[in-house]
Image 1 (cartoon, rainbow, N blue to C red):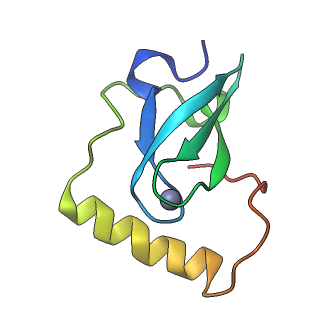
Image 2 (image 1 turned 180 degrees about the vertical axis):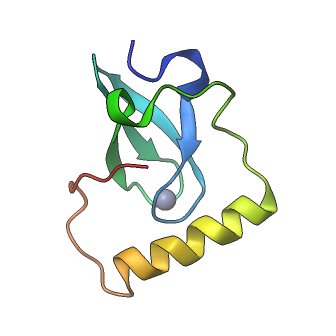
Length: 86
Ligand SMILES: [Zn+2]
């Protein structure tokens, strides 16, 4: 359930590369990035399930997400298991 068929892959929250769903829950789905191995959960229950495929994303969205990630994560490398939401 959770994000449904359009949420099988999403952009990584950290590097904006493709992250594939590794666990599908009732409200949260969990993803692992194919590029940086970052793991994160998305709470679709509060965000709302996507109405169109989450992947691929446009170059503009990649740029936007990377600048957001730089703001959120900074340049330090922290633990990989923290949660985040879209
Ligand atoms: Zn990544």
